Image (cartoon, rainbow, N blue to C red; front, side, top):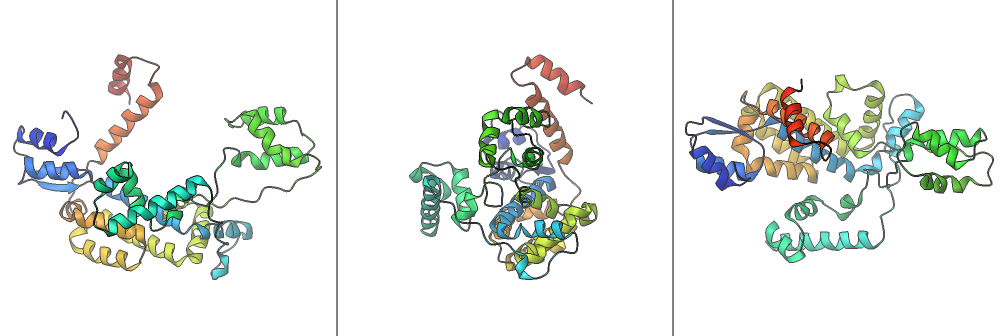
Length: 348
């Protein structure tokens, strides 16, 4: 196809009559183009994309309830069963302030006000001078605070975080030379500047001993991975951390139950029988991210039902696409297209 559009896809199909099944991602242009170019074909929403979309919804839900993530640190420190009392949750992080935070809150209010007035994403994007994807992201967020999270914990992540325990240990052993410590952590994988290390260590000047850094709560993406992984395939430490978070957050426990029920539907191809009840139960959780995911399923329900019922899938194609993208990233700007073509064709 010359371009990614419904017209181009419809023309491509019309030139190749006889399609019985169309396995596709969730893009509306493929749904519309497929209906126009091969009206008798059964459209099948690819399971990889369905699972990926659900993972995105789960990450938004985890970020929304990020105040419960420190419960995992408590469980790790205790080395025992996760807490079951609400007190396991940490105090919510203070709201972010500043120019960007104020602008985000203002845009969130504008987007939701215009949506309530019946405006479409395209109309709102034109008025506010933002892209449709940005408007969609604002529309999905139940509150502006969901958009102001850097790593799912309310804290700005630093590339020094994973090296902080080593720096504290070396400082307490008597090594206070920032340049030397910079060289040492570079050998351990640190990619930042010496200036950043010097700035971090400046707070310790005048102290002969500094406490070990407080354990950081898990990031939203890590917790999302735990939720999206089969329980029997989780490492013991990850399972204990997830159990602690779910015990502290009934909302995330409900999200996790929904994810595992969806996995059963997908793996056992029981979409025709169980998809409708699952969507009803997911909506009943009250979680905005799941509600958004269900709304997307309902807009494409026939194809989604087929994807969760039939054997057709483009998972193998997605694997090849991912491999080609990896090769391109490894070589982009360093080699000619001819060499890239050879690697794509000859790679195992």
